[in-house]
Image 1: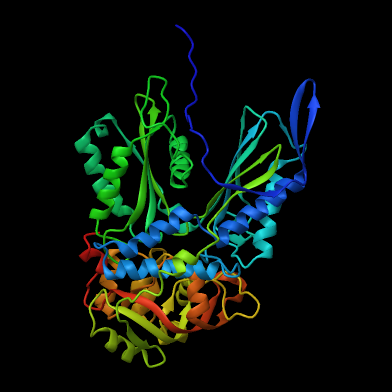
Image 2: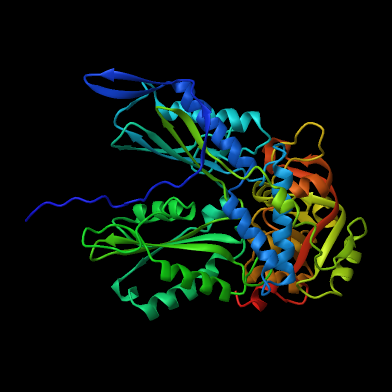
Length: 535
């Protein structure tokens, strides 16, 4: 049998637009008749710091164009255009390079291909990690990484390290990088399904997608960039392909397979997947067609007895950037810096909001909300209390030990969120909502004690929350996921820590807000906006 080798991923020419970052720390040298690329550790550190900083504040042109296109879509609902306009406004605020686009500034992920003629004479991961550290410590970002002290005890690392850094050896004398910042929302909406050959026909795959797409929900801040990967030589390889495809790294793959087993994109099924996403009705967070901007469907070889299928996404904080180091210097992908074309699209007249005064008794707030249907746009004014995972756990433990529900949980709406660092001179750092579903297990017990009667966060929740709100007369209000910078700049007037200060970004805070946008999603009658949309 004749030996044949072909790369699994046969990528086409890189069409990325790069700009020169620096030439410092990069040189060439002739060794044994071969020209080597010598890279000093400080060059890797500079590149990593610069890349992570860029994606904290800027997005790709293609992504912003897709957001803007929703404004012109005659089939888009008013709320979809409102969400799209808000996301564009958020990018304008973030472009000032003070408030990051999203409060969840993410896990730092670096995927690199190092040519075998590249010498660094250093621990590349250490140098890259140092650059990531520089940006997270030096900028107004958030520390989200938890170190395990024991099986059940954790502690924030307070620098956002460790980072995920994967380096692959390859031919050549260049060093290529993809830097990503992945928040918990997009990470938590990555699914692996172990299927069989029976999936590989038109009807079965369509049914599969119709069944699985709603699992994505709205918790990861749509519109999404979807990735569906069918096959893979292992489950791990499948999921890695999902992540890279969602970042656009495989856009130049061939569009057909061959007997070598090469990976390819199926453009026909990308269109079908996008149509099926639109049919879910989940739209741009509160109903409509725009659950996703685009889709990537990748077909991989597989073991005859295994068919891993991965489904994942990149969220509206589409933070990816390519970079490379060559003989000419250090280069980084050019992101969208000239935002004038998007600024000219705004302001956009949206649905008329209902103004709710939060500085009145909770019973009065509940009575006022009860007069309006799910889907109603609100502008919240007054006091909210901020609490998320660890604070809820602490409060529940306090109650189990005989304590009382804190008055701040009974007197005010609870906003599930954790802010980025506050820039000098501002009242707040980027401060968008976190995924509501992580707090579902507390709602019934807390509402039975008079707490959490009005909750503000992002995404769909479990049937248990719908039932609890109906049983106790509570409400869940959906905040737009994604516009963390614009919320900090325009809606949050004051922030103060009032409990569990040692929890850092997860401490309980009291905030004052003005014209804070939210939609009624679950009401006191058991109505569920997402159920109405056939989630």
